[in-house]
Amino acid sequence: MKILVINAGSSSLKYQLMDPAKNEVFAKGVCERIGIDGLFTYKPTGREPIKGLKTDMPTHSEAMQTVLQYLTDPEIGVIADMKEIDAVGHRVVHGGEAFTASVLITEDVLAEIEACSPLAPLHNPANIIGIRTCQQMMPGVPMVAVFDTAFHQTMPPAAYTYALPYSYYTEDKVRRYGFHGTSHKYVAGRAAAMLGKPIESLKLISCHLGNGSSVTAVDGGKSVDTSMGFTPLAGVPMGTRSGDLDAGVLEYIMTRHNLDIHQMLKVLNHESGVFGISGLSSDFRDLEDAAEKGDPRAILAIGCFNYAVKKLIGAYAAAMGGLDAVIFTAGIGENGPAQRRDITAGLEFMGLKLDPERNQQRGKELVISTDDSPVKILLIPTDEELMIATDTAALLK
Ligand code: AMP
Image (cartoon, rainbow, N blue to C red; front, side, top):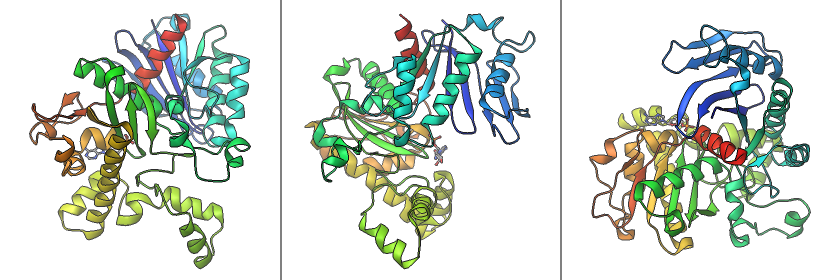
């Protein structure tokens, strides 16, 4: 089975053609700077990639056309005909409370995704354009929407309700939704497979630590709490995002620096996080280099991040009343032995015993706790595309 996975952003479109049953990727790539100066990247597996090719892509339509043209190219394509594509799986950021799982896309579903757009004004409209474009280019091919928020719809009201006047929830849909759901669901499933236990029997904490970071409590295969909230700005400090903040700080800074709410949100989204604290970089590799040379603010930034993740591990173990495994995934989780060491340090009392040697590994599935660790610590590379393709294939059946 060949599934095309599409992740459409406002000026980009990532794609991957794969067989989820065999976890075989035929080709992947990205269209960037759509509507600007168009850059196309195409990586057919096992063959020379094409990177950053200037290509005329005024809209997502031309971008999608380019993708299909390369996939079916007689010389460098990976399929003979577009008809070989069985279905398309679309990443959709916000499914609100309407979607608790992936769905086959119909006009009603599209209308519902559109209704969620006010909750994710930068992302959902771009996702809809991606879907509409594919529908036009590939009529009759089944399309599936896979939502970042759906996995978290199992959170109980006590976990998702903000302590605001209740009408903001009932009238305005203000609540914690959570994001990175596709990744948390994927690694939780892999954790169960690695531990050789049914997921229904496991209490897991999934730490998706990348440029954006979130931590999720997964009890019996269901998300029961997560650190991101109404928007992906909440939770732990991130590359450039502040994470949780006392709302009183906003009024104080806005008054003192004469900022409007848009300027304030720009600071919180793009100038804060470990970048804001360090004044150096949002990338942990740069911060680690600077910290090694003794830069106090790089040391502080890394320390704030690790501390926030550590606190959530404690909180979520309490929320679930137990813990079987902690999972590290995404850029930092998969590649940052120092972060994994510092986050788990001092949690031996909870049963987490990291194996220092195993912890040196990067980017592959591995138990990195000691053999006698009561709670396992797992390194699991995330694969959102595989999860999207798997959900898509399952819905076709
Ligand atoms: P992601 O958003 O999952 O792609 O993660 C991106 C982040 O992962 C980067 O900003 C880095 O901070 C971090 N990262 C990637 N590779 C490494 C590495 N080798 N060591 C430490 N951090 C890394």
